[in-house]
Image (cartoon, rainbow, N blue to C red; front, top):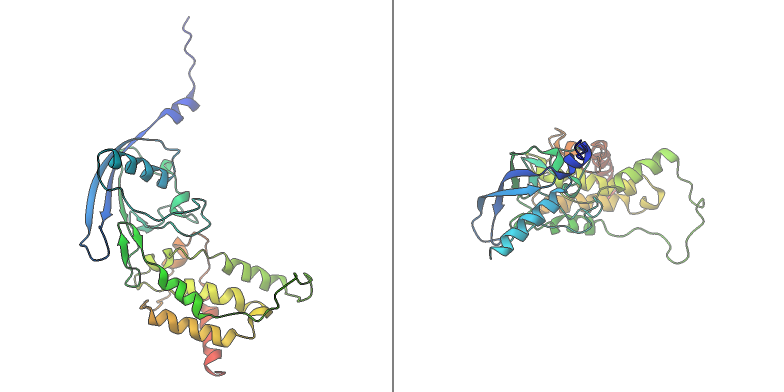
Length: 263
């Protein structure tokens, strides 16, 4: 009698994949970039997409070649650092996830995967898959400050906020500023990102005193940075890893129109 015991779970974990990667390589902001092909083997379906790129880079380093540059930090879908196009979709095929949360089991053995940086005039390529997203930081900075007392924590119920407004503010504040909405939009519009940052304070009483000035300055900065106009087609909401709703854009537009009459 054979001692072999069939273990389907072990087979799944032992299975590896072969993939063809077509990756955008660009040495620096002024260099001319292009797509480069890499054939990779022994990729576990349990790896995250960034872990797969780590394996590719280890192989490149062993061969004395320049590794693929990509931005990342927490690798938990929280910080918003990672982000690039996977087969033409920002963050890849899974809804409500960042690229660091995308796993290789989402692909098939033998697949060809195209990997490109965010594409927007306001996002200059720094190197390979890393782009300069400081334009988004300047939009946030343009919003200025909020008039709240600092020091000891206030009593939780000292400023009553209806639950529906608190929930809406919390949902908008979930934006991690990754830039996927901009990269996926055919106009490279920053409307959803800016609207989320406007809405998270517009829903709350603490955000009211500077509300008009905030929305005017943030929209003005958004235009200065060279982002395109919103044509309300929904690509932004579809790829947002935090599923920020387009209703925030409507709120930003209302706040902006009101602010024009009060400035």
